[in-house]
Each structure stands twice: as structure tokens, then as C-alpha cells.
Length: 295
Image (cartoon, rainbow, N blue to C red):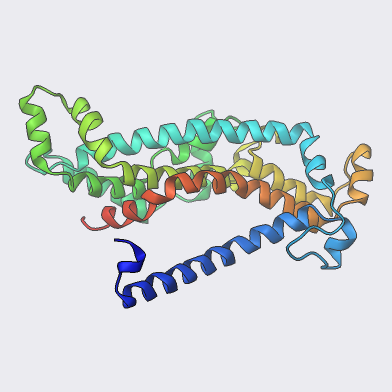
């Protein structure tokens, strides 16, 4: 219905709602604008808190300092490998575990036992030391698999997708069975397309988790060249104040401050997710709400 033909109360609601949402959008965007401005400002301007929403003494020194280091590029490659491989493995395992567990007990007699088996892991974890020992004894230390396999299956994501699968009408599956379709074909042709909101939500959570994770890189990687990006940036910032850096970097560090460099690394760390999120956000709310209705 055209805006002019709407009732006055409806028009007022739309106007107020638009103003509120626009205000929230601006409030959420301002910290990132400030962060980018600080990372693009001079050392003196950043340290004296002169930077607000526009760079003062514009310079790309912080990004040049990060980008010219081979360790930075190596860690970026490791993070990209982790995101691609880790997300593919996570999504495959979540789908393959959630689909059979979404069936009724009459069709999958051991369903209850498997559900309890997975549910226990949601509340009782092995802890840091046992996990470290398992990773070490399996021989995947200092490799990309140490960053992926320990958390290859997220039970929380499995439960979310399981509940979404259970909301799919049974008639669709029965019709496919009558037509001669097998379970894998039913999963690919019926359940996955219908469950796109839940899958997109889980995909977003998985991408964010892999990209932002830094502690496991410090824990499982023996060589700094194998650090993911977040782990490398963390060590870079913490080492500035306590360790001597290579001679060729001293000139750059004289023109940089910890605040400028920290702002640059935080912005670089958040940028990929900020780019991906707008393409998945329309599925985000629907995927969470529908996936949390049932058991």
C-alpha cells in the first residue's frame, strides 16, 4: 500500500521506527569509523586524543607496517585456510549429525541415546589440559588441523539445525520416498533448501568463530609462521612494549603508537565479517527464532 494512503497511526509508526533504526545503525557504525580514523592518523594525534571521526595527520603507516611483514601475509593465508576448511568441515558434520537425529524414535531407535551423548558435551567439557594432550598425542600439533578438528562439530549448532529440520512437514519427505528418493537426495533436495535461514545463521556463527579465534593458535602452534591472523596480531601488539623488534622496523615504530597499531589490527580483524554479514543478516533472525522453538 502506498505510504500516502496509509492511516496516520501507521505512517507515524513507520516514521518513528525508521528514525530509531537509523539512529541505532549510526550508533553502531560510529565506533568503527572512529577506529578507522585512529588507524589512519599520525602518532601524535592518536596519543593526544585529537582524532574523532576523521583522520588527523593522515597516514597509512600502520597498515604499511602490518602489510610489509611476511609474517602478516603468512598468518592471513593460515586464517583463510582455516575459515575455508574449518567452515566446510563444521557445516558438513552439523548437517550429517542433525538430519538423522531429527527423525522420530520410531524411525531411529537409538536417537535418544545419541542425543544424550551429544548433550553431555554441551555441559561437561574436558578442559584445556586434556584437550591439549589429545591434540598433541594425535600428532596434529603445529598444523592447520589443530585449529579445526578439536571443534569440528558444534553441538549447539547441531541442536539449532535439528530443531529446524523437525519443523519441515513430514508429507514432503513421504512424497519423495514414494518417488523413489533416498535419504541423501531428500536431504539435498528438500531439507537443505527449506532450512536455508538456519544454515545461513550457523554459517555466520562458524565464520565469525574461526576468524576471531586467536587463543588456540597461541596454544597449538609451535612456530609463529603458522599463527592465524588474530594470533599474530595479538602477539604483535603485546610484543611492541616488551621486546626489541627488527632494526628496519624501528623507523616505522617511531612514527607509530600502540594505539594506532592496535586500531589498525582491530579494524582488519573485523573487516571481513563486516563485509560478509550484510549478505547473511536477512536469514539471521529467522534462523535463530525458528531453530529455538522445539526440543
